[in-house]
Image 1 (tube, rainbow, N blue to C red):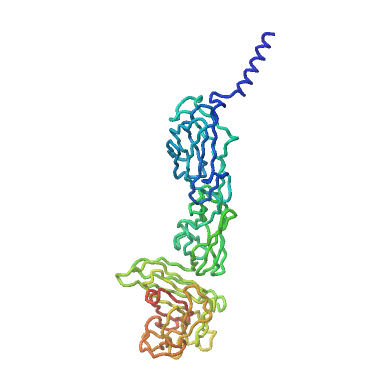
Image 2: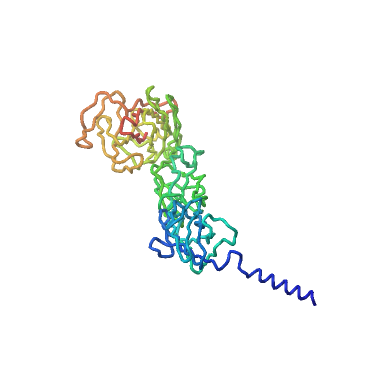
Length: 478
């Protein structure tokens, strides 16, 4: 019987321990209300902006002092600064505001003004943890020195709203067809294209793990984007490591989209078929097959371009690029169509300081398909954003079919004259009207026309450095 009484008493004592108030005491209450400056609740913030909120402490005890408190701000908010009134100090340590020497009497209040920077996407409600608050001004004392937080008289909500946006952290740079697009020109091992999630103030939202998708925005060459095109952001950044486009074109862009942020579009970039890295003071050469011509007529017609080293004091490192099909159709009066229409060749050199020697080889099968197939009939139909001298009797014209890409419109077109021979100068006041005759033509001009032992037609020409003619290189057929 005695053992039963002892067991019952122990059970009752244990139950009392679970429900009885701790030494901190429910008889020493206080409240905290986080509000806007006009004291309205819930407190509101806009993502990406700095704003002030007020945390109002009220001492609800009958006689104890509210002396100090540690006010913890939600981790999604950055604390810029804090002040307290009517007395005391506020020290910011990370996301904790240490309030000391408040000396708030029973029935009194203290107002803490907190300057915050909000981040995040969409609308979210953040809850501030209940502060640890003590009677002592210096935050000392046993747990019995703590005041008791009264939730029913408090409001610790903060609503953050704002629309996030996407921004290219690493822009796509020029690349070769079907090779990885990175942030470095023609370098598949360069830094990956990257997109970041930013708030209204342009700061990265490091908490974001948004799913971001890339697609072709402006499809300058009718290409297809390959690779992993949807990536989940890590700490607000999505990196795309294996993107490529299969067709050449000037002015491609990538669009970035996400269900959680406003879309964005990259800077324009080019996809080139041939890109040769050229060292200082060294000639460099690239070759491209005339794919359309070879398909239509058979054989192995091609264009070989040599970027000629510039004078000794220039800077002529850069990339020699060659591609087919940019800018729409190009046809000149008097031109015998040997190269297929899609084999309009565009040449560019990034440093702008090099002349280019171009040697076009037309397979004998294509040459022999034309009745007049002597070497003298080989011509170069040339297109450029600048005026140039033309073959006698073939005035310069404006190419109405030009589709801006390699350079802005207008494009001028005409047959090139022989280097060092007489040429027709355009009358600038009246387009497509002959001007004076030039005694000795310089670049752009034809160096020679001939046939090799195999019967292939060969036409070589010299093109000026892009720097000398408005920073642009040309297009041509044959």
